[in-house]
Amino acid sequence: MNLAKPHRSEHTAAEGGLTGIDKRPVEGAVSVTGPGPRGTGGSGLAGDTIGDLRHHGGEEQAVYAFAREELDFWEGELGRALPNGVFGENLTTRGVPVDDARIGERWQLGAPGTGPLLEVCSMRVPCRTFAGWLSEQGWVKRFTNRRMPGAYLRVVEPGEVRAGDPVTVVHRPDHEVSVSFVFRALTREPELLPRVLAAGEALDPQAREHALRRIPG
Picture 1 (cartoon, rainbow, N blue to C red):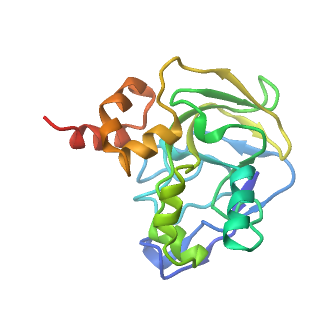
Picture 2 (tube, rainbow, N blue to C red):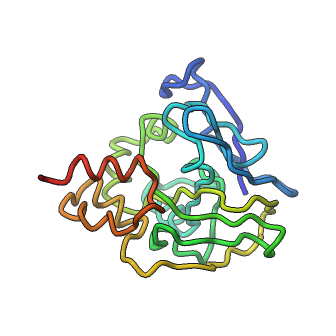
């Protein structure tokens, strides 16, 4: 479980130049609730910071999950240590196929009735803040080509979560539209765009609108 350590950056479009991309592991319980609509609502985690509310945060980006296995991959590629939270993720998972999670899939964190219930709804798109934070040449292209962006989740039921809490998949839709599938469709493989719509109302409306605008005819 990771929360922001806000700092100023020339690479963010946020008013005042404040970004919360630098997240650090925390101890103890963290409250997770729906933050409100994009543009006014920030993170779903109490104590977290979203600097650029116009482009980040809100109900459809309440929680960002990224796999520890992917951080390990990038450690090898970049030749440096990447601690939990360095990609701006709230949840650094282990043993959870984050990028294969389907849109509308529901995750129970911790024990039912105490931990939050989350729903996968979209994927991360690399931005200039992310690229500036990592200071790696050609980072947006490299990250995009990997096609493993991590998942954004909305809060279905609030609750408290702690580091080490299990993640249990309690619902998995029968369509093919995974986090990675949507990312591929919206970046390098536009021929997949018509199939993205099979995710239905569970898909982030902004991603759905983007797909609809780009489908020929």
